[in-house]
Image (cartoon, rainbow, N blue to C red; front, side, top):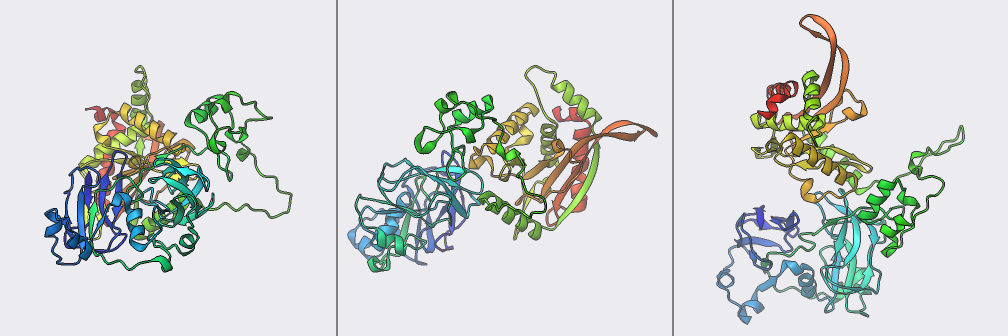
Length: 522
C-alpha cells in the first residue's frame, strides 16, 4: 500500500531520493529511487494497494512520450531504443546486469533497516563463505541505531564473499556480501565495488536506457523486512540466545554470560539453560567495580554504538535547530494518589502514575493541538491524533516506543501498552512501527528520585514533558501549613510552534486532569 508520495509528477529525481512510503505487512518503509530523471507517471495513488510488481511509477527524460508504456506496448523496438524495465523487487539483479556483472552474481549491500539508520554494524554472521544460501535464509544480524535485526537473503546461491567482519561498521549501501554460483571468480568485483552496486570498471558496459518503469517492490533492501531478535550470545563480547532461553534465564536468575550455547553459531537454547550448572556466582560482572591501584590513572574505551551515535546526532540537531524554552510547574498529587489507590483496588488492575500522566497529556493535547504539532520549513502541522512517545532507558541509551491514539485508550490499556513496550525496548525487540509517529513525548525520571529536570525535544515533536518524583513536603492550604505531596513537571517547547502562552494554557489543562483525575474518566 502506498502510504504517501514524497515526489509528484514532474519532479526531478536523483538516485537515492525517497519516492514514496510503502506500507507492507510488517512496517511502513521508505522506498528509494535507483534511477535519475523526471517522475513522469504515478501508477498507484496514496492509499492504493496492489500486488508486488504492479506498475508503481515511470521515470524518464522530461517531456518524454510514455504512452506506449501506459498502453502496455512491449515491442522490441521500444525496448531496444529507450526502455529499461526495472523490477525493484530485484533491484540488485537489474543494476548488476545493466553494468555487466557475471550471470547469477548478486551484490548484497548494507540495508537501511530503520528510518534513521545511516550505518550498521555486523553483530554476527550466521553463514560462512561457501555455504549454500536459500531465499529467506538469515545471513547476518545487523545492529542499527535502534535494535539488532536479522537480515534475510532475497536470493539463492552460494556465499562467495563477506565484505564486513563481525563487529565492523559501514554506511548504508556499503558492500556486505556477494552471492552467486559456486566457484565464480568475484575478486575483481569486490576490489572495485562502489556504492550504487557498480561492477568493476573493466566489465562495465555503457547503459543505453534512460526511461525506467518502477514496479511495486517486494520487501528487499529498498523496503526492508527486519525481524528484531534478542541479542544474547557470546561473539565479540555479545550474547545471543533464543527468546525462550532468555526468558528461562531471567526466571532462574542465570547470567547468560556464563552459559555455553549449543545452538547454531553458539546460540544459547532451551536445553543449555535446563542443563546449566551455576559457577561461583550468577551476579553480573558488570556490577563489580574495576580494581585500580591507588595513585594510578586508568580508563576504558568503549566504542560508540550505532544507537549512541544516533542519539548524539538527533539530540544535537534538536537542541541547536529548535529554540527551546522551559515552563516549570508543581502539581498537588493528593487526589492523584488517592485515585490510583482506588483504581488499583479493582481486580486484575494496576496502573502507574506515569500511565495517568500519559492519559492526562493525551486529553490535554486534543484541546491544544499547537502543542501537538510539528514544524516544517514551509508549514506547521497541527495533529488531530495523539501518539505519545514514552522514553525508556536501555543499556545502550534511550528508546521511545509510541502509544498510538492514547486519548482513545483507557488507563488500563495505556498501562498494558507501556509495560509491553518497555519490556520490548529493554530486550531490543521493538518493531520499527512501534517507535515511529510520536506527536508528543514524556520522559519520567521520578522513579530514580529526580525531583526536577529538563529534556531535549524529540523532533519532529514540538514539546516534551519531563516528570519528576512525587515529594512529601509541607504545603500551604487554606492559609495553614499542612503535610502534602507534590510533583514537579517541566515542559520543553519549540518556540517556533509553541508560544509561552500556548504552553501555559496546556499546562493549566493538564493540571486539571492530574489534580482531579476522575475527570479523565468522564
